[in-house]
Image 1 (cartoon, rainbow, N blue to C red):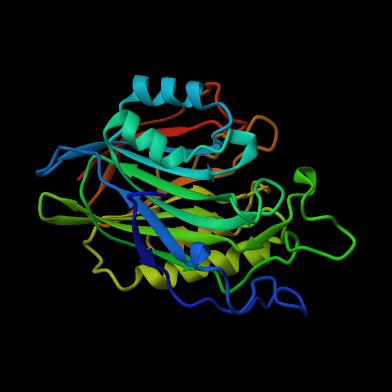
Image 2 (spheres, helix red, strand yellow; image 1 turned 90 degrees about the vertical axis):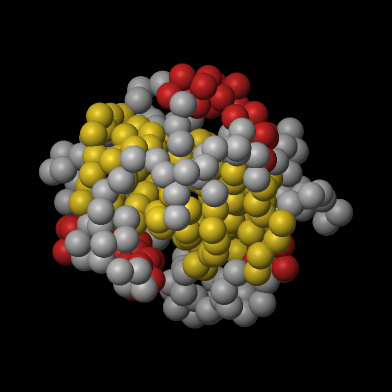
Length: 296
């Protein structure tokens, strides 16, 4: 974490998912803090931008992920399941490693402290990362009020066993306001809960939709990530359309996971259009990345 800039996220709320709170009233400072770094040299207005949305499975296959970034040359990477200091990824700061390698600015938001992947002296984290060639005006984190209690430590489950995935923290949305030649571009990077109901995911999404109301209708806004929409007729997709957002795939529901179907999405609102949208069937994760060019 040396040399990174820190920003404090918003206050956390207690979970309503279980009788006992899934997210403690107070969390370690590291779970309330964004990490960021600036490695990009480009500036000025981009009339178009290549976007890559991808759950990268912690970065366990980092060389393959780098190969895809090298081939696609994105201006904006919206990543989920990004490790920091975890044993399974050799203790790497995955977001910073990728940003440095490709000359991009980055922001990392920690969802969870992974209790089975680190130690008290060297804790491990897992969350979302945004990498971009554009300057980052500001960034913040929405830690959802509605959470699952699935991940929290329990007396009969040993927290140090990696397979059990015991965690402190809770799901978040990473929000970044980018500077496109003096014009704003707002990006929400989501990872909605996998160990919960469709209603829980809808409640988390509602927090994002409500937050996006702070921006004028003409401001280009991207909402993307792993929505964990396990069912074809998920209520999340029509809810986003009802709120004025458009899917990169129109009415199509392309498969984005090796086994589970249509989990990953890119939606936009405002002065922004799509072209060349596709799912890339490439190695590197159990999810397939979505690539799209946006016209601003």
